[in-house]
Structure formats: C-alpha cells, structure tokens
Amino acid sequence: MTTTVKKATKTMQLGDLELDLKLGGREVFKIERRLGKSMLSLFMDSQGGNKLPPVNEILIVLQGANQNHGVTDKRVLNAFEKYLDDGNTTMDLFNALMELFEASGFFGKKKKSSKTNSESDEVTLDPVEAGQDQLL
Image (cartoon, rainbow, N blue to C red):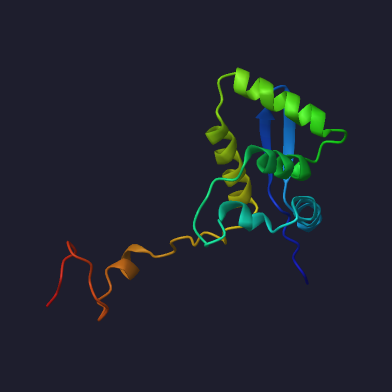
C-alpha cells in the first residue's frame, strides 16, 4: 500500500487578491523555468552567502504557486501595490515566501522531539552542555 502525501497549501492575502499557494512538482518546474534558476538560489548570492530576493522574483514565485485561475502579472502587481498601501512591507512579503517554502518542505522536515521523560533522564557518555547536571 502506498501513501500519497499531499503538499501543504497556504492562503495569503496580497492586497485585494487572495492567493491559494502550493509548491508541488509542477509549480516548482514552471517557476524555475520562468526564473531561469533554482528557487533555492533566490536566497544565495554568487559566493554562496545569504541574500534577500528581489521583489519581482518573490512575486513570480507567488504567482506560480497560486492555484487560483486567471491571476495575471498585472493583477499581481496591482495587488502588490495595494499590499504596500495597506501598510505591509517588502520584508512582510519575504516572510510570507519563507513560510510557503517551509510549509512545502523546501528546507527539510522539522524533526519532532519524541523523547519521553524517562528517555531524557538517561545516563549518557556524550559530552554534556554547560549548565546541565553532570554525574561525574
């Protein structure tokens, strides 16, 4: 029996547009083709350091991830202008992009702590961080 995992969908209000965002394989393919580069490279400069992507590239990703039909470049740009007029910033837009990437698993899956109280009290030979009780 195979289990199909459905990619998360995130809803975002961009000005007067409500975007239903999903980054599945088809969306990633189309966005990367339009950008001419990997989506992860949006956050890296040519030396491998961190950078903030330009607004036009963020808007391309949001439009490409949008599941609502008929949202053109012009509508996205007008909605972005309204988004800014409503008091939002380009940093808010960047944070929304980061949330979409996280929800879609671009940065890997978060490991859940599954330790019980008895497991965390186990004695270990591993180095102990400063401030923790030590047996020796």
